[in-house]
Image 1 (spheres, rainbow, N blue to C red):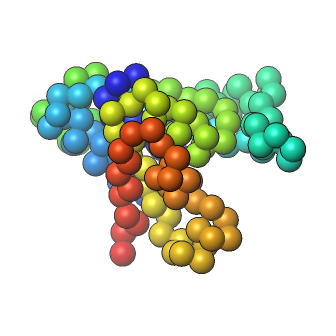
Image 2 (image 1 turned 180 degrees about the vertical axis):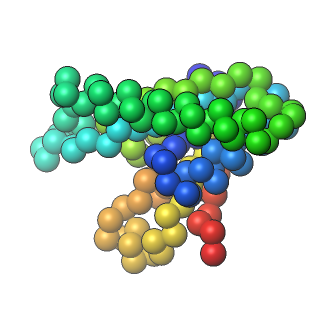
Image 3 (image 1 turned 135 degrees about the horizontal axis):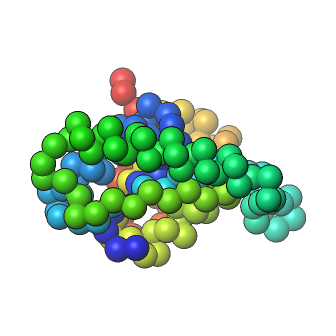
Length: 145
């Protein structure tokens, strides 16, 4: 979906990213897509997410929590607001889902966990992967210091 896509996971960092994305979408009169990902394990051989029917309730809980957070943040941000707001939730691997979403977005916004260079080297953060693989510009909102 064209416009701004923001990834949320319920953390304080993703809340800051959401708030920034709402303000930016309002300034640009752009649609906002909020993407919540129920993180699942990846297949060891293919790297593809292992999604099962039992994941559906957790994905729905993520969507509902994201919907509540979005409503509170949109109300707090005031005018101007985004042209429209869509909340989506999927089961998958967060970085892969955000990179896929970037193919249809004008801008992707993610929060940073602030793990530092060593943590990114060892773990590969979502924001680091999205910055390197996204098909559109990416804004990383830094952790509160």
